[in-house]
Image (cartoon, rainbow, N blue to C red; front, side, top):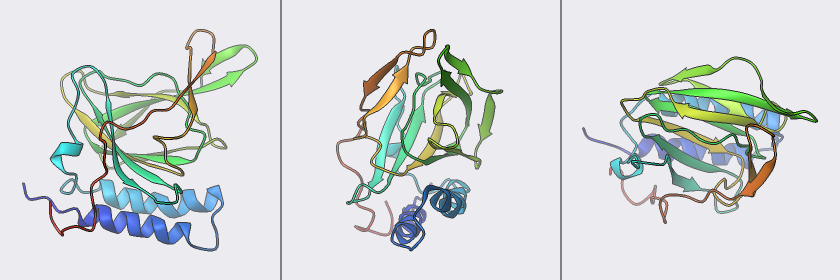
Length: 197
């Protein structure tokens, strides 16, 4: 299949324009970026193969673009069969958009009695998006909906998610543990180097 990185380039330009606009509060950025991510994950002809490779044991988080001012980052998550995250938070707003396969999103809430599942599991199919943020609900666990194939999603975060100090939570007690996720790739692709990859 021929791949063109142009949809990702268009997406990054759109998000950058919103970041430079007059209305940069969380609600406005969530509203403005939703249709951009929906358009990006509506087609599956742009993600370079090297940024969609699963690992046999761990899900992979590849940096697709990091804003030079750390205002946002774009990441591909690649889920091998049955792989999942721990219960975790983000501390910034964000969007999850499923590009291939499907994911299960399980939300949690933390209170003085511990951590509890908050509502039913949500299944996100290819082309669907879901928001996270400290104001909307920021603690969740995500897993590949399939035990026999890879799923891929694209995430947009209101910060450089690979550098942000955030938390995983003990599912029994809710005790937080700080972590910094980093990225599976050492360098992000150059979106402006060529029209096609």
